[in-house]
Image (cartoon, rainbow, N blue to C red; front, top):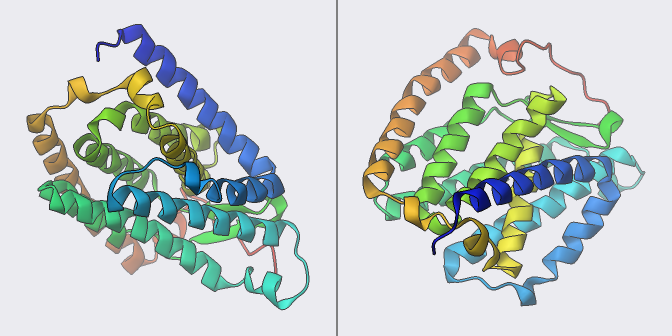
Length: 279
């Protein structure tokens, strides 16, 4: 499909701006976000997906995003009762940590099955270096129940380039649209000067993107088809660079934990925040 360059630029710019606005809206309207994503899960009869990986990927994002919204609401409206109190306990943050881990792991396995071994190594090392819950994952009742996850700038960059490379190999047609959701997740915390909002931004952009792909599978191929830029040699060296960059990062990450410097370095120089809701 021959798409003019201006269409790529225009459609990608509009999509990035739309996603950034959507992140802000979802953050500010916690109850609406919860209701919206529950309703969207029940739209599954309208989904047009092919293969186990696409169904697994979509469901493994849609169900956890509802869980995230439910936990946010539990902090925003700290109601009494065993159910609501349980959502304010550490197991919730560990569960979200596990979801992030599994989200990377399933793509890493897919990378390996496609022979993209260096990028699979990068994915494995990104799993290893996720900052631990419960220490570096918190909820704030003062900000609409926001999830604060203290990933480092280097981690976010490596995650972004690893994910781009994965999609470049697995779904080249959707590469440019994936670039949009990854850039929106990077830009929103920068705009807000709140790096701890990266994970929640990434969660919402991915959920929105997969929902659109499931319901309107022809939209992104029509607007920003990236098939023409796919190149096996680029994929090979891109994955290799990602894998090699992750190796020294692992040593830095472990050194921060070993020396106790992670308390500040993972938070970009900020001191640890106390929990805003008693658990």
